[in-house]
Length: 223
Image (cartoon, rainbow, N blue to C red; front, side, top):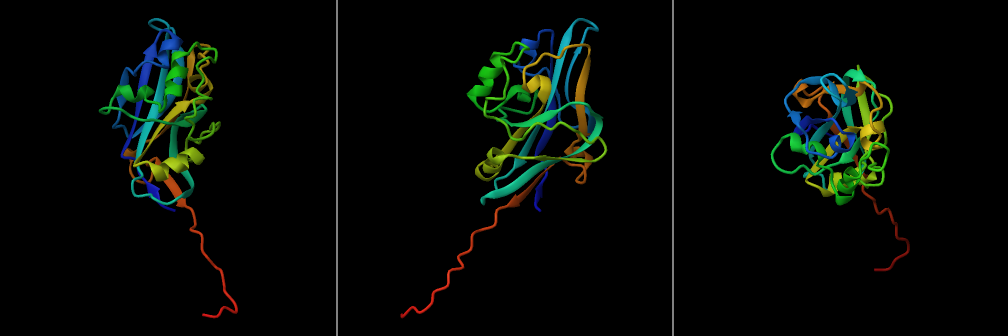
């Protein structure tokens, strides 16, 4: 089964005192060269030093320009590390400009931008109807092994049709659904980045569809 390592993997974070702003504003920090992080994707709330919501999202770019055939199945295989308390989901992205904190909210499509602008912490800004899902909700996380996240039909089509597959991994229950984190604390998942080496790299794993074969047999034809 062919695999592709990411050309880029990183996280971007944002910390703001108001939930409606923390989801949709450009990120305030990023890191693109860590080996592993215990808090690769995170949502949380603290009152230390002033009330602050924090969201961290992970970003991936895979070069899929060589794939020109239909893709039967695919997954992003991520080696867990550190925390495993959050549910996550993969969504489609379009990263604009140089690598930086601005990738934080580079979701693909105007529906996603509209949803973020509607954020109120009670679900008005949910991304569930934005049409950007690349996976289903992932509700369990293995912190000591590989987490195989199956990609949906939209992602399979984009693997074939796009030169680069761009993905944001985000926390599901609060960030994706626009439900403000309710109390002091956080939920997060951690994992190894590509800088950790080939074995632990968050790979795109795919299988091409089998080409149809014409097995017609002609009998009794006079030529």
